Length: 296
Image (tube, rainbow, N blue to C red):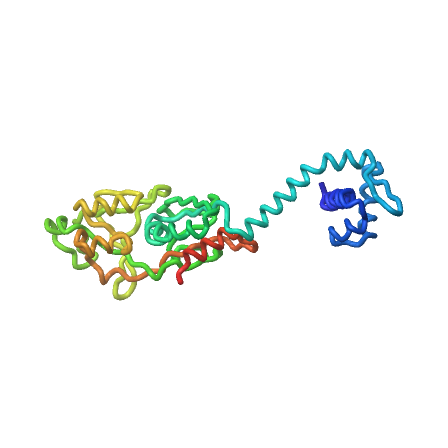
């Protein structure tokens, strides 16, 4: 159905319900003459008279009443659907889907989750942990969270944390059996716990910052995993050396259950950013999430 045809049906319903062209015109915010023209067009198109008109009153014909009875429920559903869409734009409610690495969930989302739920009880969250570099928008997510260094330039990007650092760590029990490396080159011969992206099969590089430029070291990987929490647990149990986000291990370092090495070789890099494609009309639920998570 074309837009003009729908408008004609809405005009007919307003006149039939108001029993007055003038009152219906006020309700639809249009002139009586334009409303009369719309009715003539509808009757001409249907080939039936829909309204009895006198100088004092307007009433549906038998055909008009039958049409009015059939239109009532479907048109009400359309109006309700449009109103609901507007409510999604105005009131924070509905489903928001976020794709993020485990470190971002632990560092950013989980600490703010209870307050967010209290502030916005009608918003439902779907949180998907994904440490790989995924095209989250193509997979139907509303937001992605990744390091600002890898967010594509055509995305809207909102900083969530200050700059981050990586940390090379192992347990004291591990270093009790091995020499402590003083430079990245001395990682040669150490048992290293490495991250492997599941989708591509690529290993996460062990990248360090030298005096002149960044460089990578090929390490002896004794275990790979596509989950940073498994690597952390293995490091805590003395299985080897791991390269993990500083935010994941700083508590364990402070408690003495992990020992950090090569600190000066790990420079800061852009922190976590929330990103999404440009939207002219953003649902209120998405706006609420941005406001709750963004770096103040």
